[in-house]
Image (cartoon, rainbow over all chains, first blue to last red; front, side):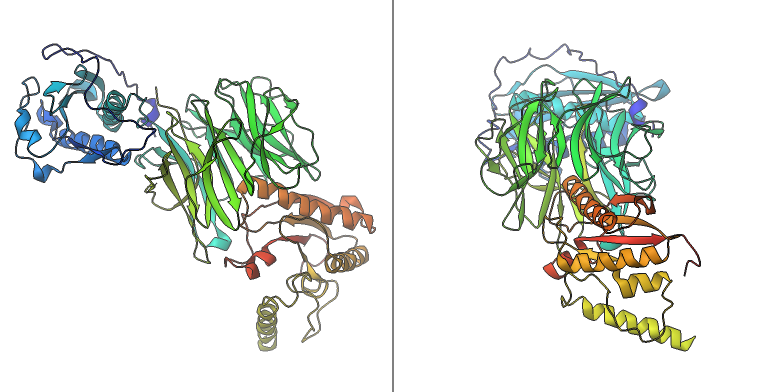
Length: 441
Length: 164
């Protein structure tokens, strides 16, 4: 519960001693091209510098390795293959011990605990074959409770140094936890770390809840709940669990809320009569402004990262398609063009692409396209693949996949933009409607 | 007591038979021959003899002739028992995205609401319209047999005398 309260001072302390940073590392990965052969990495247990750090020294190394391996860009050299060990963080590694087991990158580190739950984690990254460090050593200071976050920070730095892209491991997922049979499903809001750890339930299972979305500060989620009987939009504080209805009008029906990139507004669908239109709600005044006025169903709006445009799904032209309009409303232009119907568009945090759900010939797909609708690329296919959400660096998508039949149920999956690295995200019960936070601060 | 249990069992069996698709647009359990006397003013009568459910074509909210016939009978019954209030639930099958299906199911429920009003039901008899999207399927299988019964609007009768 206190997970987010912990202040993690990610001090970037350049460690003195070894050679200075390489301008251009010799290990490089071209993410866009898709990696055929993942880079073999060795992450031996970190060195415990205090007796209290012994368990964490191994656990932190494991989390770092799991983060890197989950990208599909790196391959773990298992500890059982190691012939050497690292016993002194400040000594040059014996590179021949690592090249002989084919480790191309080597991560070494140390962990020490201090008074008041203090935790210090240091690491260095090496190019084994060039026998050089990649970047300087880095030291992170935090609390022992936040050890997983510190491990994710280390992995983010390693990922970033080798790929040239921002990391995304120190992030969280809001989602809907599901239990029970298909025709009597119970739903609860939950949040967890991106890798499934530190799961925390935010609501009980008495009401249907849909599609939570993080505020940019990750401290609040906005979602749809049927707790009044009608679908209405609620704001919930992740730390305190306090929640409030966004609009106090008791008869309003609203769905599909999402924050603006600056966190001052929410864009969502309001249902009036038989019509569904998109509105913007100012969070300080709670006043609403109508943005669309079509006879069709206009829903699932998502802002561009600069806040200037909104992509949404609408059936105004017959079938459900994707449209882009100015953030203040106005003329919308259709961008989807390849046939089939499209829903749940989400603008990439890099601004260059839009992810969506596509339904065609009875199959569901997760896909991406340029913001003008060109270069559509379908990454997945199944009975139901729905509701993509972007990793903070715009390189990976999570979504939910629901299996067919009376015992069918949803699970969260991730897939990278090449479509090759498809993985199930481990959750204790069925799970749907994921939303990936930004990198935590 | 035993007779009553048998009656429920028979009704259940008949209901399952109807799910084979013989009465696709006629709703779940309308038009059965009662195997015992059912009080006409009861909820059971409304749900089983009038029919509480109308069904829809994929992605549509148009009322079929069969659906209109059921809704006509609903209006006649509700006007005979003016203390009864109703809630209209809208539902969709699982072959659409979640939020879109909420809005689609709303269209279906509103189509029923507007039709009931057009046929003489007072608007204030309808307390609310609840769009459930694909959240509350009646049947769990993933074939057209189940999907066709999940694309539905249900007139839920509440309140009034003797809530039987």
